[in-house]
Image (cartoon, rainbow, N blue to C red; front, top):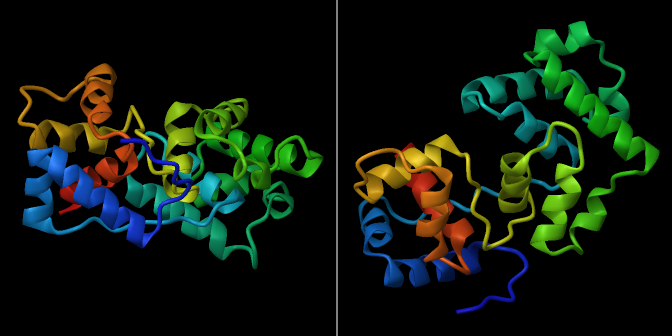
Length: 207
């Protein structure tokens, strides 16, 4: 089954859930026990990418706390505002030195015109991924989460997400946490709705 769908919405999310419950009994059980997952959309653009960078390799709670402090300190979070913060300011918000640098470089790339969020809307998944990974500090996980949550692409699987790996282990009754290769193989059965499969597993993990 192929999908030409560019962007998930509530209606297509439900269509994806129906498809996946038909092809995967384990996902069907999650839906039966916990209901349908939320869409969890994020607004495309600079603030969301900063937030996802903050989420790299830390708990969601600490990333959310840092992002809230940053966001509360400005009327509108823009690249121009971001580069005015000193390293001490950013450290006070909860940024590591590395993440402060990554977000500063992202801000500069946007201000100089080297990077444009609007262009991403017109690109296919692999082109978006490539464009994002060209930015310092943005790896496959960050690029895939942006594709999945902000651009709402329907067929994205983000390897390297620990919550998804743990949920997959539990749902699939695996003896150990699956590595990225095993995750990719299992998720391949969910095409062209891998992003919906990810949402179902996150929903299970959070429930």
